[in-house]
Image (cartoon, rainbow, N blue to C red; front, side, top):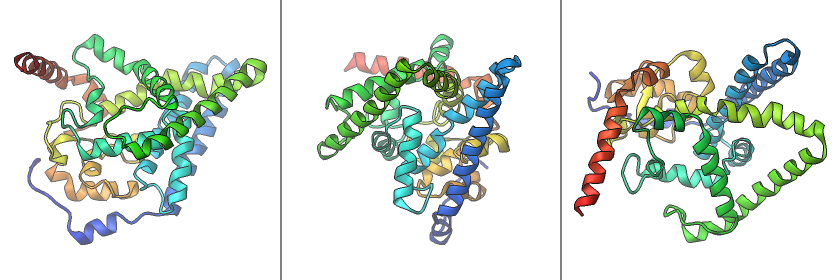
Length: 313
């Protein structure tokens, strides 16, 4: 019965939290090989009329490099700290997601999941109408927000409450380093049409076109879930199919991940087998979550209630 009290024993947790360089590198290598394969297909299909399909496939694999960026932010992708740090910067760079800034944001989200005023993810608006839903799913608010934050941090204007003063200097230099490399690539593209062609075809265009795929995945994690501290109630597990589970590095098991964030990504299916009966909100798939949109009305009612509460203060 969903929602019953379920926990992991100390022995179970210790086994599930064992990290592995070999398993992490194998999954990363497979993801990169698939990215190379879709990139090759995109290149070959330019004169065959299949470019839209191959660009969609390549872009989807590309934006789901968010999965290793997420795992390395938790330091659960690999056993070695330096591997986690290097991979987090490489994946973050491709998605305009500076590694240290994202890590601080994401750990604050884990500490205060679904708690208004404390969870930084709740600062970004959730869809409350079909038009608003379409705008958020376009991915354009993501790109605008990421570039805006990057320039703001680079100029040392860091105001996020979850970033401590002693962390601000490093965060500013991280943003400046990312901007320096982006600027160098842009100047190279402007001076050499061949470089512009490769960057546009294999990185920039696929990332922008396919960002909606990642937004659709991420929206399911907490939208419509209870705003309570209980991690098995405030997060959604989406069962989905093996391909999606592989592409997102098992992060569809999101309630399990929030309940025990130190569990390695490859152990999440085993964690789901133990914790599944205690998870309050589940969806059989991402298509079903977006098709039904039962949570849309709850989001609208929640916004109305918050506005009434603010007016009464």
